[in-house]
Length: 87
Figure 1 (cartoon, rainbow, N blue to C red):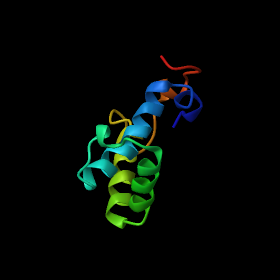
Figure 2: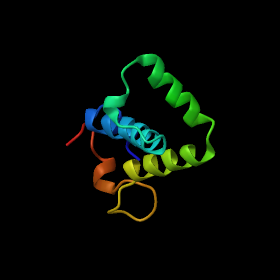
Figure 3: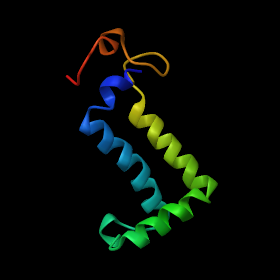
Figure 4: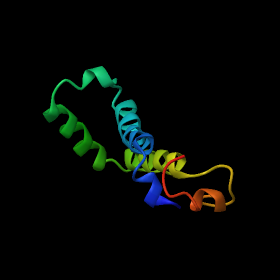
């Protein structure tokens, strides 16, 4: 995977953040607007780390956000590997 380029792409960072946040909130029956304090945000994330089901769904969500469905396996295409910056 071309992480050199992905790390400089704000869309990729947004995907990673949402791939963690949304399964956690969904499990706890919450919506984004329910997170009104940083302490509540930290508490929810800490609880999620202690729950194997939530950790599993987050890992699957991260996999889906990183995987390029146009290639075989878990890799980028040869063209994407040649990028030096997000296209």
